[in-house]
Structure formats: C-alpha cells, structure tokens
Image (cartoon, rainbow over all chains, first blue to last red; front, side, top):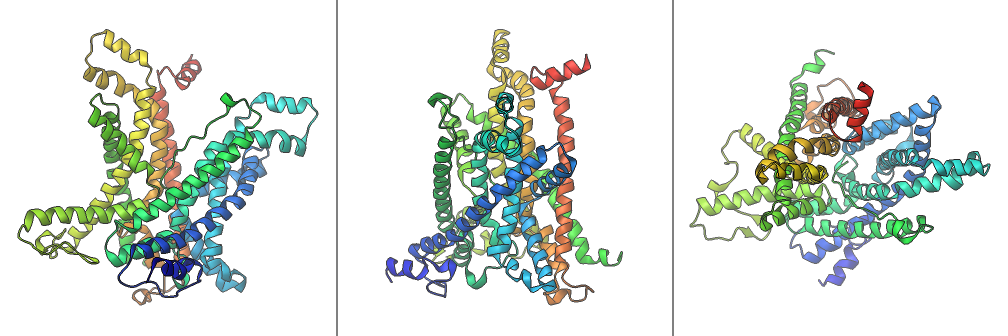
Length: 268
Length: 278
C-alpha cells in the first residue's frame, strides 16, 4: 500500500471519514505521520473555537474585575481564581462528570458529554479566565494620558471604551496573549486523556501518538512526530499573532514597536 | 458516613494525597538543584559547560507538551534497562528491538520481575519525580539565569575590587542577592508545579485522580458494594477545592517570603518598605 493510499484512508480519520479500522500491525512511518496529523484537526478545532469565544468572555471578565462596583468585581475575581487556581486536568474530569450527571436530568445535555462540545466549554472557560487576567493587567497599565485625552475630547461610556481603552488594552496585552494562545493549543492535547471518551477512536493527535506508542512500545517515533506538528502549529500561531500585533501597533514608529517575546510554558 | 469515608479504598485515596504532597516536597528541591546547576553551567566561563547548560534550558523548554512526560518516562525506563542489559548480559546475541517489542534479558528488567509490589511502585514514583525534576529544572534554570543577571553589576565589581576570587564572588555576593529577583519567577513555577501534579495519573502512579475515578464510579463491578450512584462528580469537586485551597495557601506563604527577602534590598519593593517603616 503506497503512502498516497494511506493518506486517502486515514487523512480524515479523526473526523470519521475514510478507513474505519486503525492499522493494527506493521506500522509504517507514513501511517503514523498521517494519523497523528489527522488528529491535529481536533487540536486546531478546540484551540480556534475556545480562543475566539474565550476572547469575548475574557474582555468582559477583565472589565468586571477592574470595575469599582462589587457585584461586577466579585464574580469576575472568583471565576478567574477558580479556573486559574486549579489544574485544567481536574477541570476536564469535573466538567465531564458534571455533564454526565446533568444528562440524566434532561436530554438537552446529551451533546455536552461528547468531547466536541463538553471539552470545548471547559477550554472556553479556562482560556477566558487566563486571558481575562492578562487583559485585567493590561487595563491597569493603560497610560493615564490616554484616558485623560479621551475625557478631554468629551468621550464617555461605550465610545470611550471602544475607541481608547479597548485598543490600548489589546496593544499592551498582545504579547502575553500570544503566549496564552500557544498554551491553549498545547492544552488541547489533554482532552482525550481526561474522561471525555474518543468516540469510534476519533481522537486528537496525542491520542493517536499514544496509540502507536502503546502498540509498538517505541516512543521514539510517534512523540517526535507529535512534537513536530505542535512546533509547526506554534509557528503558525506566532505568525498570525505577529501580524495582528503589527496591525495593532501600526501607528507607532518602527523602533518603538514592541516585539513579541515568546515564553512557551508547559502546563497550566 | 464516617464508616463510608474510612473504607480501605478511601484510605488509599488519603495516602495518594500524601503521595502528591511528597512528590511536591521531593521535586521542588531537586528541580531547584537542577535549575541551579543549569543556570551556573549556562553562565560558566568554560565553553562546553556553557553550551551544555544553554542547550539543556533550550531543549526542555522548547519541547511543547505533556507529550514530554509521556515520552520521557518510557524513554528513561528503556534507557536504564538497555544499560543494565549491556552490563549484565554481555553474551546476549539477539537484537533488543525485535520488530515492535523491546526485549532485554530477565536479569536486566527494572525492577526485577520477582520484586515485591512496593518496589515497582517506588520505582514508578522515582521515575516520575525524575521526569518532573528535569522538566521543571529547565524552567527554574531559566529563572535563576535571569536572576543572576539581574543582580547589579556594580556589586560584582565591588567584590572583585576587594580581591575576592570568582568562586567567592559567586557564592558570597551573587547567590545571596539573586533570590529576591528569582522569587517571583520561582513562585510562578511552584504554582505551575502544583497544577502539574494530576499528570502523575498519566505516568501510571495511582494518584488522587485515579482513586477519585475508582471510588466515585459504579461502572466497575468491584465497587458495587458502595451504596451510591455515580459520585465521581463530587470526588472531582473535592479535588478541585483541594487544589484551590492549596494554591491560595501557597500564594499567602510566598507573599510572606517575598516580604522577608525584599527587606533591605535596593529594589523598588525594598524602598517602599523602608519608606513605610520610616
């Protein structure tokens, strides 16, 4: 069987298209690369959607935490503390079993026990809490002159937030937010190791890498492949976020533009 | 209820909490030592040592994921068995990798096949500690490396002017002063380390995640004698609270230490303390 056939059979295996049975013996390098790569579809799916939805909640949380009113501040503080103070791994488990219990209450919760929705919700809350803290820090360090200028122009309320505070906040938070995005994509690898079942063996990249490592007792092939995919993914994220960073700071002279400094972390 | 909470399985759960605490207590100093070694190596004046330190920091920090944990434990295990195999069974002619299997002679098995259960558990735990220490050692090395560079250069020049040797300068001037710069990074690392402990579960140690799953569930026939339904949700809620409390306590303690260390330092924090006292 040529490599092209393998790609046709297993290229979209992770979303259920193609050959149903996973290879059982005589694993070729091509099969490993293809299947682990097809698992990356899930990692990208979780990462992208959690990041996009989390962004809005994070903004709300940051504004809430910076609010002088207690009824806004306290819930935001608690939300951020709970999701930043406990391991994501435990959150996944708790979320899964919570949804499992809710399922018996109402059939409405049926899809929540599947990874595509349940794990996405946990990741969404988690990234919202982490980015919320980043945005909050940025809100606190907005130069006083900027808000004073907005006041001097007579801007209030929504216009002041939309045109002055929010863009400045994003500009200040962007390097840290890039790191958070990278963490998030790495964290997606935890999904299928934490209660959420991989239905019909449609798992993410780490699920397949682990499958191969278990079957062959040889970790030296699948995990480096996985690492390679993740490094590639990280580079793509850095490129996209770097482009946005340039756009956010397009009014600044060239030397004053803040550079993205990457500090990839390991675990959240 | 009191009876329910003291079944043998629950006792195992409590022991596994201690395992987690033990892991933290052992890993933190070992990782710090690795970090200290790495940072000292990275700023050494001997080139190979410097390259070694820098590449240690770069490689471990660059590899992205928990994949590192999964990979490293098997790799370490096979590495040890391979070395013992070479040393103990020199007249073994078959290849070690037979297709998909990793085969070593009986005497080289680690731990030995007939060893009691606790040896296996201790061995697994040691591997886990070692893996954690290597990974977090690299992060700590990076923090300490930065902290050593943050110590004002004038301090080192003064030490040199007083005729201290390089070694004396390092131990008597640089090391005592770097902690205040290192502590924010190290405390951040400690928080990350706390949150990394559930990954023990992935390394095959029977930790709290394992027992919470076992105890709460009714699916496994072994536990049907427990008079409740699916309580895994509550067990994991308890774990969540455990970690939150632990994080909070650490925050408070680390703040106290930071206060102590800042005392009398020529930093913004130390200046603020001096003004507040005056």
